[in-house]
Length: 203
Image 1 (cartoon, rainbow, N blue to C red):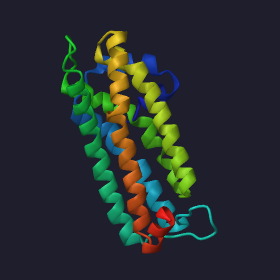
Image 2: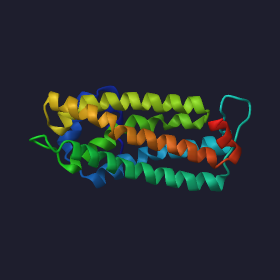
Image 3: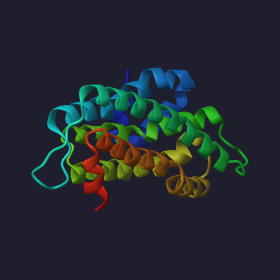
Image 4: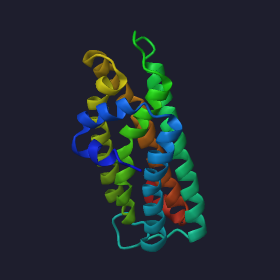
């Protein structure tokens, strides 16, 4: 099912070539990778916020009701699925001046795989302390950046110079879409607990 996860984490450069040779479709990517991995942060956040509760460094915790947690989880899940397609389309648009421009399909597949570490770092949400979740997002972003720079030339079939330029642009615009999404979701989950949580965030 998610047979590329270990390869991307352990030997990404070799795994990118392997993924490239498979010529999979976007529907296959979603069915066998994105739909499964995107569930990791959703399920972990649901468990953490309903059973453990949010904390912001003090002794107080703020729990989300199960009904609110499920509703927020569904919205979170849908947003992540859409974000993968948006980031892939952005990569395709940013590559418009490259002579051997990769297809939109390849760009969306590429976006789905570079998001892998960020999905996996969703396990940090099992203990929803604000600083701990931020740490998880930073770790996910750093390794996604590593996959991005490693994979752009080999998977998209462009030169290393073109790959570096495209990777840098993608990092500055595309991947940050997913990070912004996670920040928004953290705020949504927080607001699902109690209006007083908003005060703790902004005071």
